Length: 84
Image (cartoon, rainbow, N blue to C red; front, side):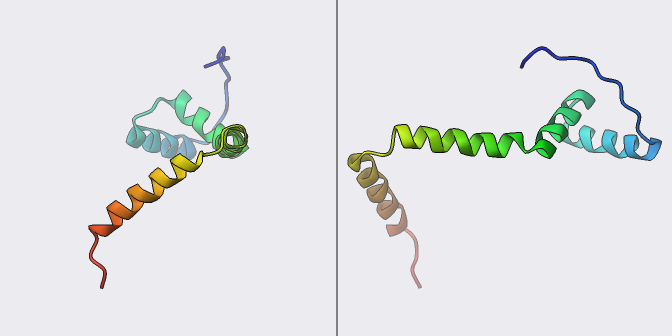
């Protein structure tokens, strides 16, 4: 993680109680809870992960051998499933 900076915020009591209940259920600190909330609200995780995946795939698409291996593995896996 990059350098962390402390920030003071004001919350109504009832909201803080709800946050504390939720973070205890998730077993995370207040700081981590608000870090995750801000990241999710800003949409950083999903969009950045999708962009990273697309760039990586464009640079290194599957080879024909990898595609065939995935197809064969799927066929083997599905062969054991009941088809009604």
